[in-house]
Image (cartoon, rainbow, N blue to C red; front, side, top):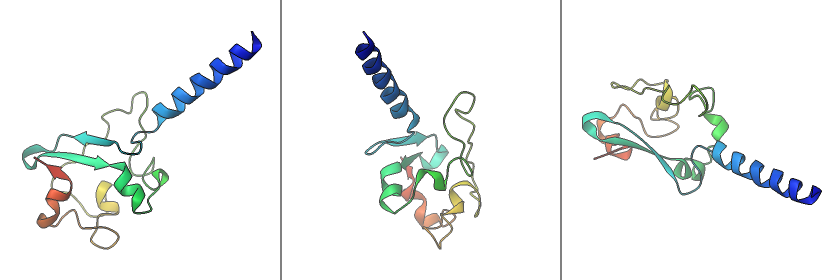
Length: 108
């Protein structure tokens, strides 16, 4: 009976750990993007560039959790140094304020 309890505890832990990862490998998040089209965030692309979750969470973007869903509202015009513009400033990553780059995030 004790072994079953341990196995069950491990299984439950794995499920909770998996659900804590907002964007797992090969998955994306989609946000409404207005007239330019939805915004598609690909966590794997960001990880491939050497970024870690802690680079943005929770300092720039709050983590998913009770009472936090839908708390991030990204509006136009985008501002350098805020939200995505923290990195997408034209130096560290492509500039989000350059009209030529809109299609890199916005998908119609």
